[in-house]
Every structure is written in structure tokens, then in C-alpha cells.
Image (cartoon, rainbow, N blue to C red; front, side, top):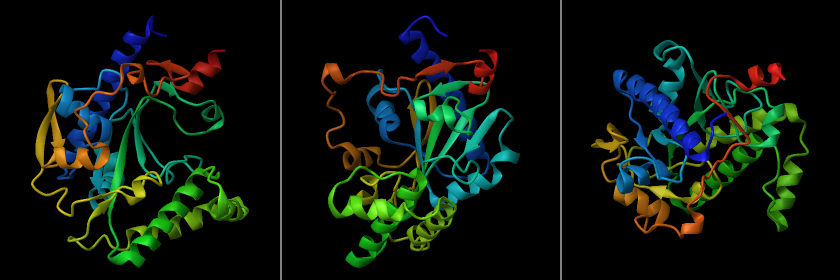
Length: 279
């Protein structure tokens, strides 16, 4: 373990940027588009690197490039970087992909101790899908996003009223049916991906499932500086960040500038299982 929070976060940053460099190389060599996203994009624009109190890297990709990345990762990436999602690890609970560095540990939650998936330091990659046309289509797509998230996570969102009742009812299905229902919802979400004039949505949370981005989001890509290196970026990062955060240049109150994902357990030389075997 490191001696201080500051030295820990510095090493987390270095490890995450190492993972980002691998992703960047694979994407560049194979003509795949990605962009820094969310807090990472704020950091690049506002700080030319990590937000000083942030500790993760987020990327976004159009669905077609994301799927190509998943297909080629094992052959194209060097050993030691683990691609992880619900397809590779049935007990994974997110609708996006993590790339983790092997022989590291970044345990965020107590429930993860019982999970079989890799628990190393990671970079998140969020796929974007095209938005359905018309009010009814968007409503149906939003419901599909909610169902997909429900069966990914395997527990209700905590919503009250009719939403909570529907969630609890759907979760009464035998657990062996969760994957099939999740995949059926995914097919509905993806059904407009051939329409290049449609907006983008990145439905990693229920809130994000109603947040829409321009149809030309991944056209005319540019580069942006992040921690002394350059990476891919959407052509208009200001417009994207205003959709996500409004006035993103305004710093949060000082009391909110704290390490967001402070882990329960962190190690830069061993997997979680290696650490528990030593106990």
C-alpha cells in the first residue's frame, strides 16, 4: 500500500494513463474512433489532465467501433490488459466495458469481494447508440435501456411507485433468464444504429438514457492534450460538455473536491485474489 492518499492517486493516474495509451494505440492502428469523455474530457479542457480530485478515465465510442474493439482486443492488445464486460464475465453488472491492468487491485465496493471478475485499476469505455426517431420510438428505446440496466445489475433501482413495482416484478424471473432478457433489450436499443442522421445516446445509466448528443458527434475528430500526451477527442468538446454538465468551467465547492472513487483496497503489484491468497 502507498503511504498517502496523494501518492496513491498519483499512481492510480499513472496506471490509468498507461491503460489509455494501450487503448489509444490499438484504436489508432485499427482506424477506430474514440473520445475522452465526461470528467476526463473536463480535465483535458480545464486542466490539461486529470481533474485534481478525480481518479478515473472515461472514453466514449460509436457502437460500430466499440464492437470492433471488443472483437480484436485479445489479438491486438499486449498481454496484461484485461477487457471486461457482461459478455466476458457473467457477474459483471455494468452495460459498458472496462479495460483493467492485470496484477493490480482497485476494489471499490464490499460486494465486489464475492464477484469472480478481475478487480484491477481500470479505464471505462462507453458505447454510443443512435436514438430512435419520434416520441414513441424514443419512449420504447428508453424502456429498453431501463430493462437492460435492470437485468445487468440484478437489483431494483430503489424507485418508488409503479416503476419500483415493475422492477421488482421483472426481477422475479429465474436468474438464468436475465441474460436473455438483457440481450433482447440490447437489440431494441441498437436497432437504429444504421441511421447516420440520428442523434447519439450513451445509456450507461437511466439518466444518461435520455441525454442526446449530435448526430455528427464522431465526425471530424480532433486531438486534445491530456497529461502531456495527445488523444482523440470529438470535434466540439465544449458542446458535449455543456450537454453533460452545463457550465463545466465553474469549479465545484471546495468541500466537493474529494477523491470520487476512493477504494477499499488498492495495490499496484497484485490482483485481488493474489492478495487474499497471502492472508
